[in-house]
Image (tube, rainbow, N blue to C red; front, side):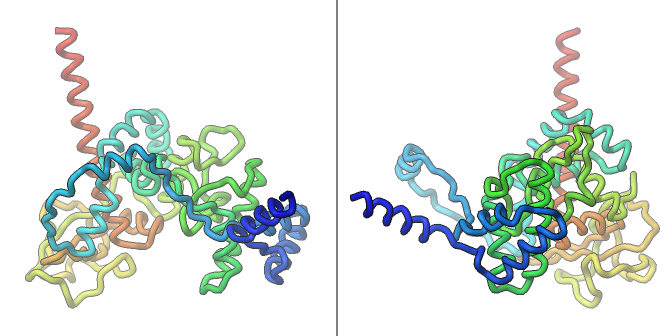
Amino acid sequence: MKQLLIFLILSSSFLYSQNYSEKLQVKRFIQKMHKNFNYKSDYLRQLFRDVRKNPYIKRKVSSKSLKNKSKKKSPKTTFVKQGPWDKYLQENTEQNRSQLGAEFITEHKGTLGKVYKKYGVPPAYIAAIIGIESYYGKNRGRYYVFDQLTHLAFDKGKRNSFYKRELQEFLRLCYRQGIEPRGIKGSASGAIGLAQFLPSNYEKIAVDFNNDGRKEMNNYEDAIASIAHYFQLSGWQKKEPVATRVTYKGNRFYGLKTGSRYKYKRKYLPNIYPIEPFDYDKEVHLIKLERAKYDELWYGTKNFYALTRYNHSSYYAMAVHLLAEKIKDEYRIALYEKRKEEYLVFN
């Protein structure tokens, strides 16, 4: 019976984990970590002996919620044709993110004010980034980062070198902060924390804003300042606009290259005009957003380009911009309601 139990335990371990320590590339990686950063080889070999085969963490659903869900009748669904931008915007800016963003600004008003004074990045844009990246800290990733980066670095793939560097920097980060590497959760690409920084960004971009001697991306003060620092390094200009929607002839836009890689002087863009007043005389990017029946077209400024350095997708940058604008509106409404309540109390 005892031998059978040991066999079952070993079999279970084999089914759910892999030994990477004997791979030649891993051995070289361990040697490099020992030589360059004085890591203990035995400790690293122990980490790589037991790598989870599937680092994805399934959501826990209670039997009660499943039971209640099964009782509900499925409503009739009316399908509305959507374009790529419609879907992207819905996925990244809904779920009450604007209201939560306004609450986030209220809660962290002091830190956001100091950060704005130092870096020039408005609070709503920082709140929008944290809202999209980690849903204000409620969803910081569903993968075990060490295991996921190990698979990406040493299994067959096109970006092995990139992920080896990320794994290296992740282990260095864990060492500096005294964290157990196998317990950290993050994204499918190894991004971690409130702002979902890749490990390689921590040392050069992350900021110890609360002066506790550590750059911690799960600390709100450090995360807020680090995002602003990232934008400042990317060319953010204080008090300048980000984007404005423009008109053009037709329903689909063709003829000129769009996206953050291309810049134009406005005088050379015939029949393209801002819908609202737009006080910006520098070169602009043309940003095309594909809806189901037409293309939205926008001017993007240097600040829009700075947003694309966080994520190179124009859709991502525009989602951040629009969510930030909605957060501003929600915050103004909340302030108005609060002042109205105060007025009624004292009058």
